[in-house]
Image 1 (cartoon, one colour):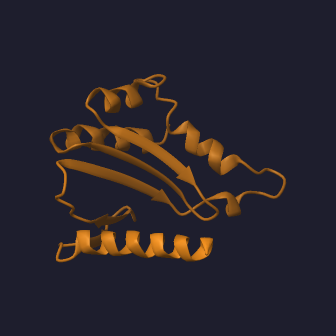
Image 2 (image 1 turned 90 degrees about the vertical axis):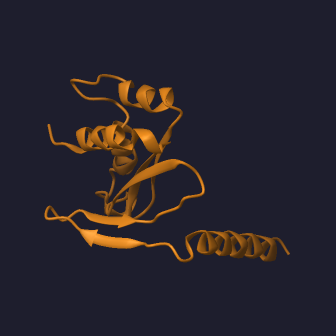
Length: 133
């Protein structure tokens, strides 16, 4: 019975997500640097969600050194030389945004959801976080 309830919930969520994107102009392309970009318009709220997914997760860790993928996920929130500590997170929160990250066996993901009017500034923040050095 419990499995049936879970299956019903999953089916409802998938159906809701599909109807939310029905008729939208989903686009998928790859930048010159190899970064894959997927754009899924969703006009139900005046927000923009930026997500970065890395094709690496816990299954890619060296045997005996578990937790590295999750540790690196947390480093995304530690700041940079020019934006120390939680400066990025505070900036997102100050404009009413949200951010988080997650690690699975084969991927690590990060997201930021911010008001549409602040999306350019926040894309710059993501770019700085991803930059080497």
